[in-house]
Amino acid sequence: MKTKTCKNLISNEQIQEVQEVYDTFKCRNGEMDKINIQYGFRALGVRLGEEEVEKIFKNQQYINFNSFLDIVTPLIYKIDVYASFEQAFSLFDRDGSGYITFDDLKTVAINLGEARSDSKLYNMIKRADLNGDKKISKIEFIQLLYWKKIY
Image (cartoon, rainbow, N blue to C red; front, side, top):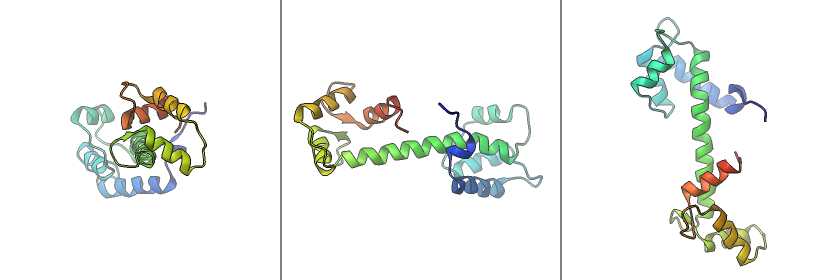
């Protein structure tokens, strides 16, 4: 599998957004310090603890834009992937119950024109249902997608 780099993990628009956040919170010297990085991360929807900040700076006082981008890119990517998984889950969870039931799965299959027997649909649920409650929770759904590498 090809190793992903910053440039292909997030879009150019997201890189531009990171640049704007960096420019907003950078210090006079053009770099970001420990205090401002927390504001920058919050602006991007990520909270950092003091230990995480210390790990980022490793006895440095400032970091430049490229370092900031390298740090935030995987976090933005994870947020985007998770949001995509949640959106996909909501397409199956027709009634908003927080679970994909047999009826939900059957409705989606019919709407997609996928003729599946009831036993095949039950087997699909059984494979994803980790706790045996005969329905798929959001966590089980996301775990299935990660396990199948559908991202």
